Image (cartoon, rainbow, N blue to C red; front, side, top):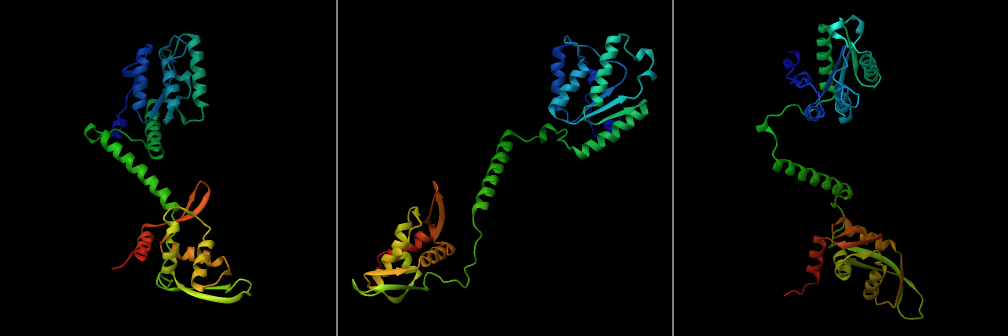
Length: 295
């Protein structure tokens, strides 16, 4: 009654005592469907199975194997019990003592009791604590239980959430573009150039819009392109400057790549251990708009 007052529904094993293996298999399903297993040990070992172990001990062992919370209550002094409440067979008394020691030394919650009132009080207090510390699903009305379709939907949403977490963790933080040079802004490149073969290299510089650089180099990044754009940029400088040979710092390539990445024109990829870049959807539109023939 006390447990019913706690909104708990006990499945007392005394209502279907295990006396054979078929009944014990049924009791295992009851244990599987329960949230907590409560063992009360007094002065009897219980009905013994063909393997010499009582069904009560087998129930306890099975409950422990499921990993569910097991709450044990062991009478403190068996000698206080009347003869009618004790096993007459010395072998059964010995097995009960071994069972008591196993329960008390299992490293699980086990409490002593001396009378019925104390037992009821200990069960209520211990179960209340277990419910708070090890919350379980509890009983669910059949008409409130989730359907298989709902469970599948929830599982798909969970998987999608995990995928998005992984994806978002790999996406670099967005850098504000306010105040940064855009595609219509000029980019200055300093270099040493040779106007004619055999002539000395002289300091030179050119200014070219980022959009024109994209127009010249964008075709390289329509598919995955390794980071070796120095040759592409060199061709562009040679064309603009009318030099036959040039020398320039590779940092200009890094700066152009970084600017395009910040502007969302290209994105970094690592494929089969090779690093490179590819045009984004925005970058492809910008590139195509610059190479398209105008009316």
